[in-house]
Image 1: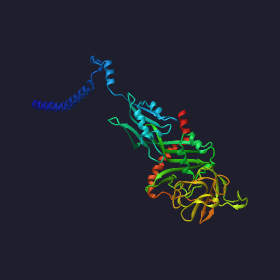
Image 2: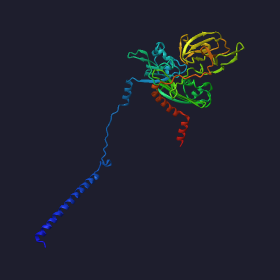
Image 3: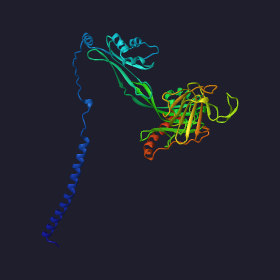
Image 4: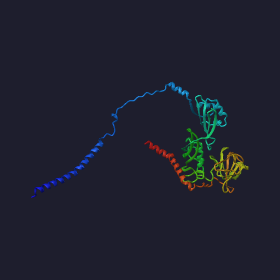
Length: 455
């Protein structure tokens, strides 16, 4: 048996132990309760006042406006300026053009007629625009127009202005033009120029297409269904087309064979057309000194049209109308220019090594043609005629090697040198951009896009 004291101590110890356990359980419960209350408080608190319950207060304020009479009086006290643009029409007189521009200023008319520089405004071609600013009385404040003497020359802006003292002055500056890149396609139905006209491609661009591909494509024998794509520059001012620039790239499908070309400015400052793999498209000699013509007599035995005897024809005759431009078929130096017996008016060009070319029966020579003059491939050296022993207008063209005549139509003419390795990275970037543009222009892509849009 235990004593009473022992029992009391045991009970006290038991209560002490129980108290410790209850405390350890009670503290976590308090922490959980506080956390739940905190979360609840966050969830219950409103984020912002309800706009629908907020009071609305109308505020009005009177604003004093000037009377109509005051506004009219203010306009009458201010000088009004009027700017107008008109296009020159065929047969336009200066007075008629000024009338459409709202210019009522005899002093300005007299100035334009008499000032050497201002007179240039009277030479603006039909279709071109003139812009003018006048006051409310029609007095001229300024007048300007842009034009150029040739496609290869800079565009000029001629301006007539009135200074602070009311005196008129004329000035000329090089015009600032906006450069754009145009992309066009065409299909041959009858001729190249008919196709470019249908595609609204300028004649200057069509001529460049010929120059790009004339060493690979014979434009005398195009077939219906041949097609082309072209990328070229245009230059604009005040929303008006001022001129066309260079053809940047082109591709021509001729009898199912595709030729591609891209313009590239080399590091040395020279530029030319290259295939997309960097090979020059420029041949050492052109196939024909005339752009569009037909061979009327080949390099062979024939009955001479004047003597009536069989005789070897030592050149190729190209039939063309009198005045057709004749081009140098390769770079070289003029070795002879003048009259030479039955050849009539004749030019002989000496090229590298032992190559020479001769051009006969010309009606006249191009300006500046004299012995020793350097000429470039494609440069005009004379014009078709019928001088010498000739029965009609044509070009007699001879190709000579070591002074011995050769058939130019049968020669295997090499290409010029390809691009230098240092130019290839820049060239590849340009070629890739043009290839992307051609992909956008190709007919099969247009058909695919149309089908996709129809779905």
